[in-house]
Image (cartoon, rainbow, N blue to C red; front, top):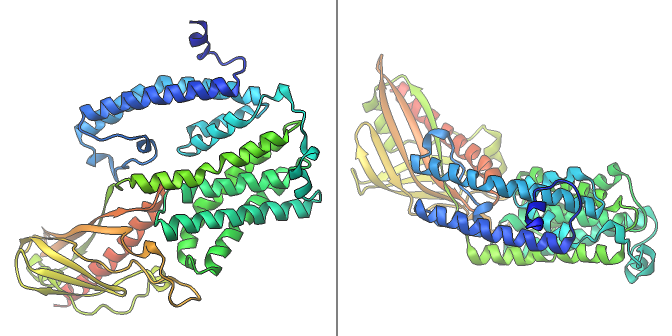
Length: 456
């Protein structure tokens, strides 16, 4: 009974074995409670739902059932959040690490990596008989600052490049392991190698973490794995996570004494990243469906606008910078037939969208599904045949519609909506990019329809 009450106490310490045991038990209890609650609302639930979840585009789209479900999950999570925070603070104190690192407990997915780190770092009071300079690893890591930095950057970059190629090119998996786990690993382990013989300053640790991430980007481009644009999109997320990993590494290396065993275990823990990538690949989580809506006011009545919605002539060459990078853009639209069952073909720079008409309510609503779509872009690269897996079947258009609303003065409000899935994780980050791109595509089409309609 004393042990249970002790879990609510901020003071004191907790060893790594007990921290691991309590953490696993609490996760199992919470997961099963959440699974029962989800089933009562008609939703499936798995461990990955703690990182893979649907973020509604606006509060208005949440149903009453969803709102109740989310409220129950938050209420259930409160005591677990408190206990987890308390135990993490005590584990940090036991390991001799700064208590401010508890913020990582609240960061999605990173809290899993941080939990693994706290499990393998021994108590600071036990010290360690095997120190930095008494092992094979100490002979492999150069003592000079430049040599240790170079080894940390190159070694982690090579391993990260291999993991990235395996996940993306062989498994076709662009998940949490690639975009979160690997950058964090880059920052953490490059700094730990760099500071193996002696503690380094925070600015220099950050520099090593950033350089290791840059080297991976250059390797992926040089080996014809990815193009410039995709790497540029991933850079903000990767740089931030590598920076976080570097800060954690800096905090660890500041301890008065770091046994080699501790360093080896920390490095070994990150071997579970390939296991995580394989787990993501085997589970193949279904991405949520997002909606992007764009509108324009046209100085023409709906019956005139309708004709240009169903099919439209050749658009002028794009002036938008985003479409000059290789991202697919619309060129013209054609239709075969009339009414529901007709097939609309929207020609893009990389191919055509095949859009069977599902709703023909002239001149108010034209809705369609998508039975075929072209690659999302042509990679900007020095290699002409670069075709990574994510160009097809990762940004998936489900269906779309054009809705026309009559306005006073013979005007029309034209709204274009696309429902799509994005198979990149974390979805919260990547759907911001895809939303922006689809919105620009909408603008290009709607403005062309506006020009055609008003000229008629």
